Length: 177
Image 1 (cartoon, rainbow, N blue to C red):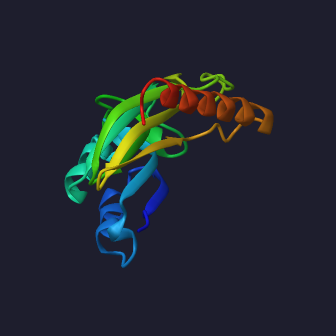
Image 2 (cartoon, rainbow, N blue to C red):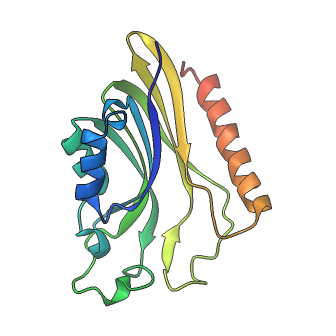
């Protein structure tokens, strides 16, 4: 009769064991139908060079759709460049996880506002959204998640949200439920 949705910025997934523990044992979160997750690494030294979306998918026995925002050209920011070891895949992005059936996954590139070479964390790419058609007990629901640029202006985020909403409308018009 209702849908439990969790939206969580997992901050790269560097504390994966704790994230899995919360999502598997919290009295409410463990029953989540849908997880909308931001800032997941894949092959970054700072998060153990793990594919965080895949590891969460396995640990939660859920399906995952992962969209890549950035190819990271550095090991990160703050203390991260000083960590021993190297990146492998060096990817960073967003994911949708669910134990229900889904179809028509789509990654949406958002309006660029940032200069990827202005900070210590240099990278190629830009913000994205992830869209899927979720099926629960025969009913369909279009689901979208995104991670807007937090550094720049509200005007920039408005442009990104506009692009995301236009993509959702296109997703609906093109035969998705």
